Length: 242
Image (cartoon, rainbow, N blue to C red; front, side, top):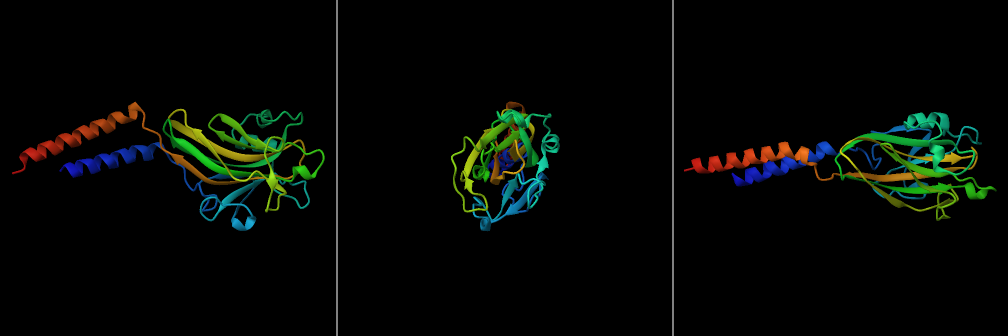
């Protein structure tokens, strides 16, 4: 009976953690299933020239706008910000450029997580901006709940020659964020064109993972009651055994 009790406790703990952390298709092996998308977004493989870092597929988001030749499908900033739940001009706070963000592309997914859970993903920032003078400061960003963070931009990134259709890239890096409180969050990641709509930049994204944190004390109460009940039942059964 003790083995049954231990097994039941392990299952109960797993159930609590599962309820507190949910993010699907982080490797894009099922396309954009689970994600909402806006702008110029696509799923690519290693034939693109960089990555993936996990599995066979990765997401590509670009600033290729409808005004370019050939035209792309990046979204105007007036559409991009509402999609992300941002107020007008909020993306432009990530840059010191006086003209701000003009367009971009992004993906989002809503998930639940317990305090202390860790959200990680791999990203590679790519750009052609250095091919034009002056190069405008396109950027990549992540949004987690109400937190908006610049991942990198043209002026601060350490760039190397790229084997993709873009001239330069940062190479894959890993970003990590610790969830500050148990709740429901919207995760968004994207790339934004700054000042002009002609210089092209992009971000590759892959291997998005969410590792559960330790359940908070309130969530442990019912688990503790269940464990105590199971333990008591085990003792009771043991005493009744011949």
